[in-house]
Image 1 (cartoon, helix red, strand yellow):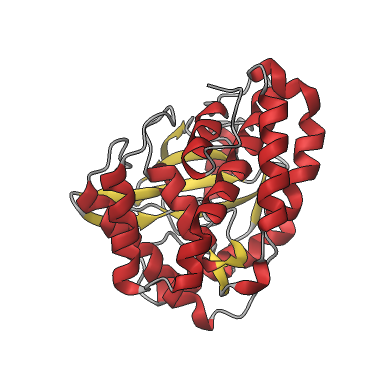
Image 2 (cartoon, one colour):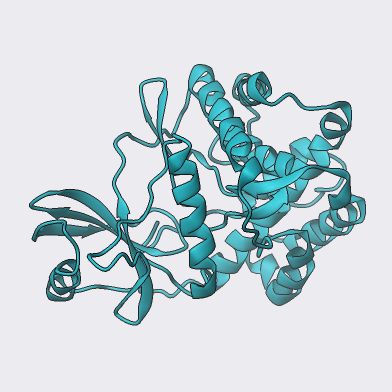
Length: 319
């Protein structure tokens, strides 16, 4: 979550008149994340999230995201569907941006989850995959493996402004991982594709919310688990592998949806691909985020360090 587009109280109050959600009491921009503009909105009848979709989220993809959330909510998963206005519409426009008013879910995101909590989220991810087996709509992964080399080229040698040697290290890993990628060898379904700890809400050891589905797509099911593993099983700097957390993620997922031998063998490559994807997108944002944006930039090097766990022989210059 972030704030790129600033919405006035007057504009927000006018927008809310189209919904049966009461009158505006307060609104606060949410700085965490890097993708969209988000506001925590309190009204006389409750609390909501207003999301304005910025350039990386295409308006034509929103029906897929909304349909997926509705499908998962109907299956009983803790996800935040969009609130329809009085005419039944869920996709709107605010300050020139596509926008949705989203159900608020209780809970907090954890910066240091325990093994028990990590296992619970692993089970929740498996439940999500089980629930999407009869979800018919599809969407290509906009940040999938075919996008990595073009994004790397777009960043170019400016990567070395972030860390000396980053261009060579990432180029070497991309060549190796893309060369080993075999998408047709694995089960595909609708995946979250961004299940970081800050995209999960918990109360104690219970998962109360899976949020921010704006990279959701149709892709390799176990790649989604690899994304989660790479996000949860390291300290914030990416330096230390937290084996108890990583094991708990795998154990929780496997309790609902066991991996077969082919998936187990390919998992390090899929996890390295997840690291490449986030190292590149973070690097692009690091180099291109507007100076006046209310947004927390994410460190791309934290994902290069993770690569040392999954591909120890390929990262040679970046510490």
